[in-house]
Image: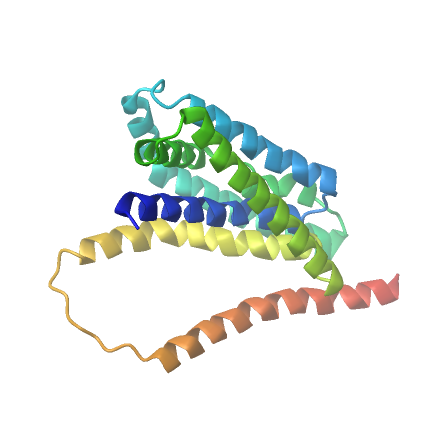
Length: 237
């Protein structure tokens, strides 16, 4: 397999993973199927537009947007943390559902995300012998399928476990907020560390698996604690 094909497949997989963020926001929010498809369709249309704009948008504009990436990351992180806490607090203390508004911090693409999508389309255009609009269609289809499948699967799974609701959405927003807050710190530090001499360090797969399992259990315990908190309210009602 040619290296260009491997890079193209990697970019498409990255786009599919990127759609999971919006899918989780739609899946835990109080949205019906039609509204979920509206969000997925918005990404589909935006991807086609991004493909069409290849060669039209000057490189300077793209670089200027990317230069604000750190600031945008911090803004998104603070927004996710604040509205995630507000979503949980409003539901637990006041039984008020604001998830139909707060989920937008997860679902709606920010300027940096749009720029990343444009760069992905531009890179795929240089790797694949396809038209720009066709590239946009491929990226948009992956976005639409990824968001729709993730949203409906999470909504169905969470409904079965009685986890679907504003409180669970708030937990997801807080987790993503922490990730957005830490990534601008961890990634530059990792890149800077590459300039230092590397030393071979043995990796204990058993300990790595146990650490990953512990993190998974901590996240799961947060969701199940939300479920236990909802039961007394239901019995009281």
